[in-house]
Structures are given as structure tokens and as C-alpha cells.
Length: 441
Image 1 (cartoon, rainbow, N blue to C red):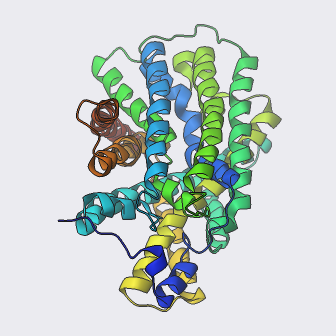
Image 2: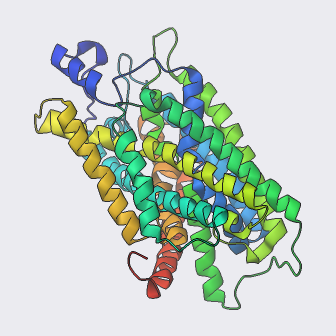
Image 3: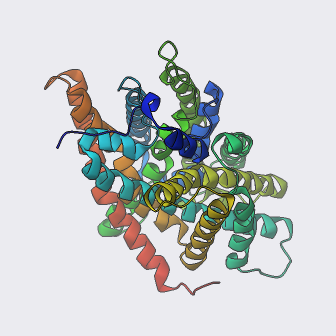
């Protein structure tokens, strides 16, 4: 089947243009290059950074440093590929991940390959951020008022969700740019607090960097789960094309130039957040570190309270970044396929129901550590580590055994291996957590 694409941007009817002007991804194309920076930082540097010292404790120094650095390089490379492929067809922009998939694999097959993966990534990430936001709010409350009555995590998740029942009605990416900027600043802030507070605390007495369990099977499963944590931390590619779609583009000044400039700055911020937190946190606490390093750091009280509030603000922005493409898919389906008229009522109903759904699932299954490992491997690894490489091979057709061909195949092999082993460790962690779990506590 020959690949097919949507009509060229300059060949669309007035009705199609009107719908594009209403849909969240294509309604505004006046973003600057620095929008790319903070949108990408917000999408990538989520609360997963706080679990990286814990992931290091299950991988050890050698494998841990290797996995962290190689993941940084591979994901930067695959992100570059997506930026380059955004406008590979003259007169056409692939504004959404699935549109690029349709161009590479064919109209139907592209949808079947990309849309389920992208939806799993974005919906699962929103659910995880519901849990993270609730836990950060609870931790902040407990830190500031340690003697107050215990409040269920369920209620804190509901409080966090109430924010999104309001913010989710902002129409498009550019309208959430202030929220995203605040979130990006917060991510750098709480990451810096995490590693500097750990450094101030110093190397703990009887610190151990050896295997965390005497059981070889436990260590193997924990290693698999740690790979999923890393995959989750580096995943932001699901919204890259959607972010680039907000940047204006002309034949003389294609969007890939400002987009790539923003990506470079974003990845420098990622390195400043991830590497110090991972390595300093693990060096100071070894195997005794919790799956969220802020839990390990109890003092100074005011600083840990501030860090948890920063995490909360960041996760608010991250939730919106991942929810916006889901809103776009839902609204596109309702308007283009089911022929609903674009309206505030349609948008209000759709988005309110989505926020309510993610809140309900988050309250029901708040297994934070296991969720990171499971979804990091199962859902985020394909769309981040190797699907862009497969599309590059299909579309660009580099010469066999050339540098580009070999690089892409190495990424594909490593990504597939990650996709297979990481969910195993994550699922085991979820099962162990579920044994003693009581609903809505």
C-alpha cells in the first residue's frame, strides 16, 4: 500500500482550515524557539527524575552510568530525527505523531501502529502524574503540619485533579505556555534541591553499593524495573511533533531550525537535572534510597516542603502537556469522524470526562514505583527509543551498512530489548505492592 498523507496545507478547504484553527494542536502557530525549550523540558523532566537514584541502586555504578548516558544520547538522536521529519514533504507538516506514522507505514497501518502506543503513553503518564501530584501534596502537608490528622492519599489526588478540571479548558499549547514555563523552572529547582540536599547530608554511615537483595532473581527483576524507570524519565517524544506544530514555518525559515535550537537547550537542562540527582543521590545513600529521593531527605524541613511544592507545580504543567494531544485526538475524532460541530460545550464535556477518568484510575491504583517501570518499558520505550528510527529507515532509506543505517539498527535493538524486559520488572513490582494494598486509603 502506498503511503498516504492528509491534504497539503495549502490545498485544504475553508471548512478544513476552520476545523484546524479550532483543534488544539493546529490552532496557533506563533510559538518562539524558547517555547520548544520549556515545553520539552516540561514533557521530559517529570517526577521520574526523583526515582533515578533508586534506579541506580538496582543497576549499580557501571551499568547505571552507562544506561543513563546512552539513554540521553539515543533519545536526543531520535528526537532530532522527528524534528527533521516534521516537514520532509514540501507543503505538508506532520503536526501529529500518527500523521508521520501514516506517511511511513500507510494510512491504516500507521494509525494502528502509532495511535494505540501514543494513547497508552499519554493517558498512563497523566494517571501517573495524578498519583505523583497527590503524593507530593500529601508529603507537603505532612512536612509542614507533622502533627495533624492523617488524610487519605485519595483526597489529595482529588484536590490535585480539581486544578486540572479548570486548566484543561485552556484551548491549545500556546495558551498553556505560562504553565509550562513555570513547570520547567520548577523541574530544575526541585532537581537542584534534591541533589544539593543529598550532598549536604553527606555519605550515610554503612552505605552500600552492592546488590540490594541476596536473591539473584530479585536483583534481576529490580534491574529490569530500573530500566523502565530510566525509560520513563527520558520519554517526551510523544508530544514533540505537536510542540513543533505550534512554531511558524516558511520555505526560507522551516520550523525545524527554531525547534532544534529549543531542543538543544532543553537537553542541557535535562542533563543538569538527571545526572547530578542520579549520581549524587546514589553516592550519598546507596541502596537505602527510597523510590522518591525526597522521601529519603527529611530535613531541612522547609527545603523539603518547598521541593514537594515545586514538584506539584511541575506535575501540573506536565499533565497539561501530555493531556493536550489526547484532547486533540478526541476532538478530531468527534468533529471530523462523528461530525460534531466544534463548540465550547463539546470541548468542556470531553476534557472534563478525561480529567475525571485519570483521577479515578489514579486514586484506584497509586503504585508509583511499579507504574514507572511498567509503563516506562511497555509504552514509552517504543515511541521514544526505536519507532522514530524505524520510520527514518522506511522514509529516508539510508544505504545498508552506512553510519545512519547502523546507528538506527543499534537503537532499534536496544529499544526492543528495553521494551521486553522493563515491563517484567514493573509488573512484578506492581503485584508485590498490590498484595498489601487497600483501595482508597
